[in-house]
Length: 469
Ligand code: BGP
Image (cartoon, rainbow, N blue to C red; front, side):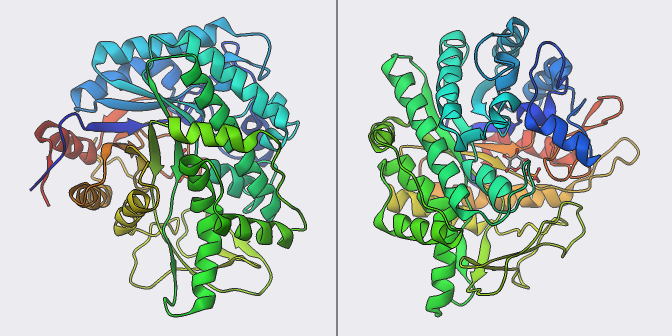
């Protein structure tokens, strides 16, 4: 029996584009996803989980099931339809209403400013590779901090800069589909970190009373052969790309010599170089001392070995097990060990990786202050049978991750909360609607919510404040 600390957040996570629906109504401006999905002839972001119209129901479920925190993101283009300039009052009002309902239900909102949905007007001009988007983001953040100062105590600037960098510039599965552009990936990471730092500095300089941090998506990168220098170097390449470069910037406000040398080498593989503008490092250094916490999204870890062949990038977006392949020239090859189970989307289930990452942060960046696990969960082809969803594998997944999380706390880590991805079923960026993660099943035809077995189980954890393992 393991107990969670007093005040622990038992949360559920959402993201605007994945759950709200009403993508082009009520004054909302376009995002790149709207056209991208339509062109591909794939699932659409509408009506998604219809959160725009049903948030009251979702927050009522939170209250009933002991979920005392919710991650929501603000859709930038609902506030500024063109990314900057004119404000959409209906969008502004919508989030006031959501936050008011959170308060009524005793559910603490943890609010992210950007969750993969840059307004199309800015996206089309280069997204965060264009420094004008950084400036626009800071102005959008300024507006939200002032507007929602009385509603929101816990802010996150960005969700998963790494996901933006890899999906847009390495794997090429998000609009505009560039592949293997390591230089663009690093530039995107740096520019977004500067945007994060400027927003944090602004928030603190304005003297707001709440807290602010960033959400990173972390994966532990293990060398396939721990005795092979080549495999260790390959694992380090991936580690710098996804973890260390961003964590250095977040906590040290400076890139370590190791991160910089890997970044420069990998940028050169793509024929480019990393541009750091005057003033950038000062912003990062200042913000590093001001972050209040790290949001950590954890789903899986990776095993990497050295690789010198051509790029081979196959993304499993269908749920057909064994169809993914990631071999990147100059970086490494991802290998799935036989003894590590995986989901139908080839995501490796390795709960101890969460522990290893938390412990690494406490040792390598001891100034981290606090961690929230802002996403963790299992994509699964849930089936509704006789009005019930028995999602045992998800319960096992969450239980094991919570267990390793508690072990990290016992070892001294300061973890203040855990958010299941996702609160209810929603749209999955590359996989549509058959990859479900929710504690609450959503009938995407009618919008009806049905608590899954995992919701009842999670309610028990929250009510007792302990994990039975
Ligand atoms: C994270 C994102 C979420 C969510 C989750 C599951 O990277 O922050 O928005 O989508 O992953 O990913 P997927 O839906 O691709 O399975």
